[in-house]
Length: 271
Image (cartoon, rainbow, N blue to C red; front, side, top):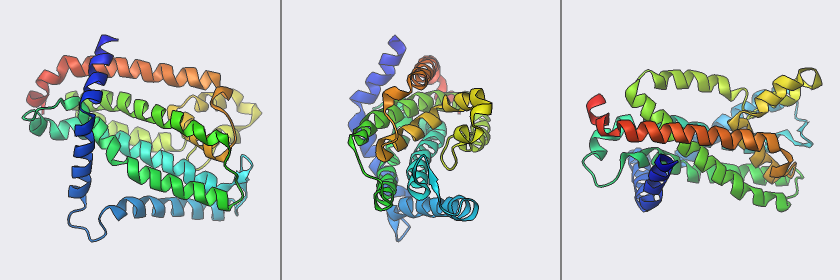
């Protein structure tokens, strides 16, 4: 637990640096593009539109999911998935690609995964807002459930920090790990509930498999944000999922912090 606190203390102490680096890298990323940061909005909107045409119009002919219009359900879920997946993958290579530059500066390398997360926060909020507006225009009424989003956003940040510090450290030690993660995430996408709720589709005949899918942390966060804005449930309605999620986060955070502190003095030599 001491190692977890040491890494978390670095995140808190250097949080202003994290935000400054996130702003700088966002500007640098689109310096040569006329539309600039608008591409962070255009790309996810086009991707969401593609899934809506395939699943919403093509396969489902509209309809509802969990008692709400599919388009609002889809956009909110996709907004969360895109934020988690992009931040997750960016954090995986964040230390390996920046270790030599950061080693010459006056802040710890452990903040680099967090920088990648905060780069994606504003596009996430904009895409999520679009989904909420679409849901409201489709007849969904916002209720006090929406305040749950504060909890789920905090859970997303902790989850991404835990996986970020773990994956970024492993990628320095074993470069092929990043390719493995990319392959796994393509598979996880279909079980995350982002475009189709497989756990619900399985029905009572495969209840055990459905419950196992619901323990997926990506599913937990996506379903939780949907519960918040579509008023379909409270966080305390799922005690087993809450326990599974935070247990997973704690274990990964412990392993990631331990490995990071143990090997970071050698990062520059390993890259």
